[in-house]
Length: 291
Image (cartoon, rainbow, N blue to C red):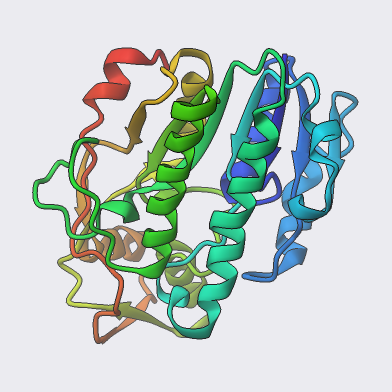
C-alpha cells in the first residue's frame, strides 16, 4: 500500500505518518513547514518518519511539486495540510487561508483525477464548519454555518471535494475532526498554553467564561479513525470524528490544576469566531468503521 500524506510534519499528520509506517505501508510525506507556528517544532515532529526506509519525505510547497510524479501509484491520499487557527483567520491573513485551504486542495484534487487505482482521497475538515450548531450532539447532515473565516474555507473545501467526487469520481471521504489534543499539540491550542503557563509561571488567558464546551478527541483516536476512513469509508460521504463527550474549559483547567496547582488563569473577552459549544454525533463512524 502506498499512501501520500500532506501536512505530515504537523501535529496530527506526524502521528498519522508513523501509524501508516507501523502498518507496513509505504509513505510519501509532504510538508512545507509554514510559519503559523515554529517550523523547528515541525522538524522535530518528522523525526519518527523522515529517515524511515519506507518513507519519502518532501519538504516542499505542494504547489511547487510535480504532483503527477508524487501521486503516481498512490492507493490513498490523506490531505491534512492546511492553515490552522480560528482566531487568526480574520483580516489580511485571510489570503493565507484561501491559498492553503482552498487553492492547494483544488490543485491536489485536480491531480488526483489522473491517479489510476486511487482507492481513497481522505480530506480532513473540521467541526468549525458547523459554527454554533443548532443541535448537540451534531450529526453530519446539519446545515453548515461556520462563524470564522477558517471554518468558511474548510466548508468550501468540503464542497470542492464533493464536486470532484460527483464530476470526476475522485473517491473523496471527508472527515470532520473535533478538537484533537495530545502529544505534539500546536502551541496556540488551549491545553498546550495552559500547561506551558503553569510550568513557566505565567498567566493563562481564558477567552470567555469557561463554561463553553468542546468535544475533545485524543490524537491516537483521530488517527485510528482516519485510517479506518481510508479502508472503510464510502466515497462521497462525510464522517464526524470526535471523543464522544462534551467537557467545559473550566473542568479541563481544573484537571490541569490537579497536576500543576500553580496554574494561574485570567479571563478575557470571548473571541470572534469561537463556537460556544461543540459535540460530535459519531454514530455514523461507529456504524461503518472498525477502529
